[in-house]
Image (cartoon, rainbow, N blue to C red; front, side):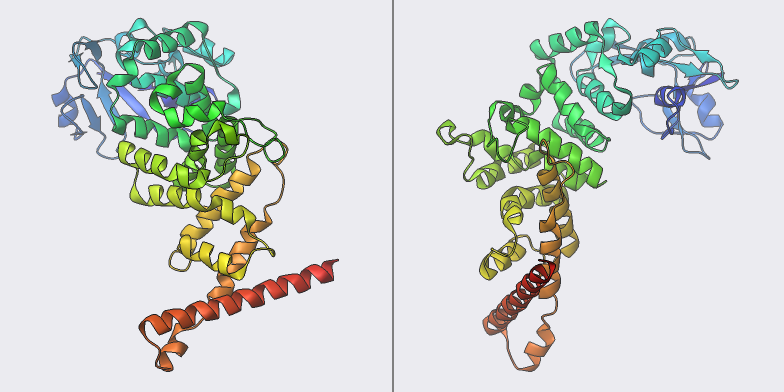
Amino acid sequence: MQVYLVGGAVRDALLNIPIQDRDWVVVGAHAQDLLDLGCKQVGSDFPVFLHPETQEEYALARTERKAGHGYHGFEIDASAVVTLEEDLLRRDLTINAMALTNQGELIDPYGGQRDLEQRVLRHVSPAFVEDPLRVLRVARFKAQLAEFGFQLAPETHDLLCQMVNEGELGALVAERIWQEVTKALMTSRPGLFFACLKEIGALAVLFPALDRLFRVPQSETHHPEGDAGVHTLMVLDAAAKLSDSLDVRFAALVHDLGKGMTNPASWPKHPGHEQAGLPIVEEWGQLFRVPKSTLQLALRVTEWHGWIHRGGLSMSLADMLKVLKGCDAFRQPDRFELLLVACEADHLGRKGFEEQSYPQKDFWLGALEACKKVDASVLAADGLKGEKMAQAIEQQRLARLDNFKTQLLIMAKIAD
């Protein structure tokens, strides 16, 4: 029995970046050998086991041959005669097809170290096409390794385009797509993931509502970066700098999908794009089974980001209260703050605006804090109930907002 460190851990070690997970491959062993050592098998589909102490994954060396449709349509050989080189050959990219011995010796039969040095993403073998999910994985690695500037090898670029054109992506189930999307969203440059999909034609197949934005112009005054698709990816990358929240990043991705529905006669303006985007975001939520809390924030950002941007001293008290209630800020103040972060990303995700301040965030947080000073228990002590109580709370909130605006005006005059 021989054990090797494989995959991403080897790649990351050679790039001198922190290793997140360690995967191991075992050559010359049977499943019972690992069970006898106390390992726990994690599934019947693949011979993968969890170490009893570290909980790291140990997999028997295996070969795979496409013999049917879908994710499970493979014939697997995990017998003790499978070699390390055969196991590495089935992997997606050369930079992920290297191994380390316990003595630190690098085993690199397919040129992974060379491609690491040259910053190239290259497929290992023609078997790459047998799993269409690898199209998304390659795009994710562009985002995940953004700081190193990896580019697609020409032959890999052509192969990805071929897979898209031949309809291979139609075999992907929504769950697997969403898993890759969530991983990509949590990288440092998630915009590169979708830009790569756009480059090879996959964006139009998998996310047509997002792909449509790249043909939609915007006002040059507010959006010097050009069309709505470029803006969206800039917003997504801005969100990644501001927050580690998946919910914020997903909201940034989908907030402007309604611009793809604007009548061209209205271009470059997009009246009503917020409302137009809501059913599209809902459709994404149902298709990809987006978690409820993630989808909820995305819908609120989609609906209210325009109102949030307009927040300021010129906004009426009634509209201020309308926004706070519409965003459910009183019941979910923490979620409201995440909404404001997504809106800040929308503000920063424009050419020339990347370093600007976003005073609207402090404005809305101050407005919410002012409204918190309304004490419902005092009103209840006065015997108010039901509709009368709700009306009294609303009036007091409006009064608090009025006082808040007055204080801001005074501070502004002092500053002048």
